[in-house]
Image (tube, rainbow, N blue to C red; front, side):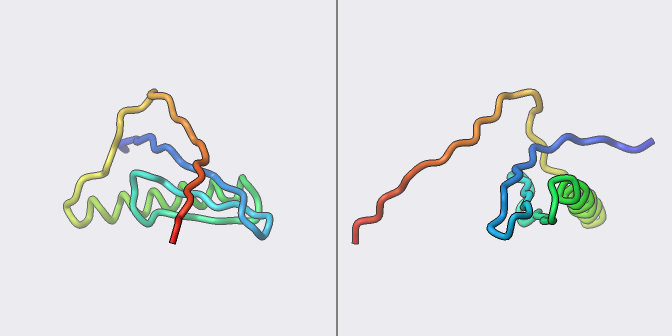
Length: 81
């Protein structure tokens, strides 16, 4: 029986018109593609590989509680030099 995990994924529109996906709880876990669906498939595979690697190395699979609200926003930062 396979274990199942749920991860929050951030999808952003790329400058070239495609998409980039990242998983905030998994460092360096990214995927990109020309369409949202392709990017979704690629990030699922990237997550799967990341988790299998963690298990192979004896490490934990990072998890946050699911069902909590997520907010994505932009903030402006001004740097005075």
